[in-house]
Length: 330
Image (cartoon, rainbow, N blue to C red; front, top):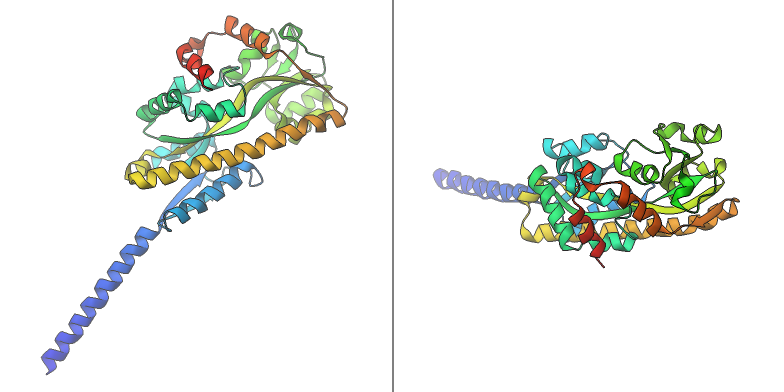
């Protein structure tokens, strides 16, 4: 009798262990924890769209992935989080193509002035064959996979001198970051550029160290440059954007079904953030006019032709054929 009782207890214990093990296995399957990092503030559309995406991926995979979003450089600066993809300290990031171009220079062609007509052209590019080619080139070199691209805003010019043509910029003292692609248009038009630190731009404009600068309208508003500038010139020279990148180690582990979920959600999130940024920009033209600034439209073709004549693609490691393919995307 005792043996039977012991055997019965052992059987029950084994059954309980098996159930516990199964539950633990299911729980661990249910809780693949991932880290999603970026350098933007919590109030910005890039963050709110990332949080939505993290929750949505959780829902669509029935809770198999729990994604925590780390905003505002919590896991490091942009260079650090890019490195983190390879080190395994982060799984998903949002970052500019200039960082992707460090692994694969041709993908940076999207920063060449006047590559994109507008935000819609940028989003159409992300569904094109040339995007797939460049993203594959980046993946072959870095091991990481780009799933989506978000519109960041169009870089425009603010100035204390009226500008209607590219030639009007000749000799203009202009603050431009020390980024070759950002320098291309101002230098091609003859501006005298200075790489003043971002935190010091307001003061430099105020005291006349420089007369002009370039940034998206949202930045011109946030940093109050409009207080020390008379003109907003819609040069629209670069359509700035951010890539959503998944670490190669994670991408390889995902099933085809999960790859589709991660891609679909990342692209929907990018479209959400893009829509918000477009709305914000549209409101700002009226805002600057209310503040007494002159807002000037220019002939972008004239600016573009001057850049094409003066700035070779090869200088940056870009390929003109890629740029032409992007131009052809409708």
